[in-house]
Image (cartoon, rainbow, N blue to C red):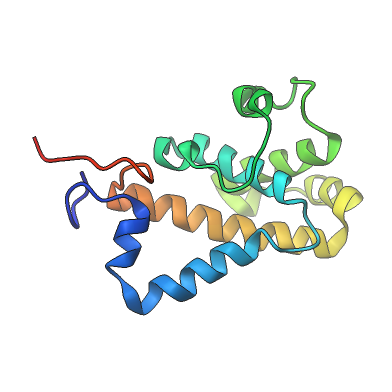
Length: 153
């Protein structure tokens, strides 16, 4: 249940906001088309943000396929062998960004740039802003997971 309209998931809530839903959905889809960062890496970062913000609805989504092992071991990404060095650098950057983007160190930014370049770092920052904003909006709305329609008790 959310405080706007009971029982709606994020997509249904966006449908109720026609002035922004189309442009927002296009912006969101365009993030995964950024050529500088692999869509799978972006999806892992989005999923990690969902975990950090405790958004079960966003973690339940699959925007881009990632392996079941990566999903299962995402909280243990620094030690799990299923992540590439590029993914680890982006996940570390994501975690700090989620807590305090001002706390990102030059070393963390350089680690990301070593794998995806400076343009990739900018693309990652743009994607994290979109993901973080949408996850926080979903939490504010108390939206149900997409496809799960809750009913008032």
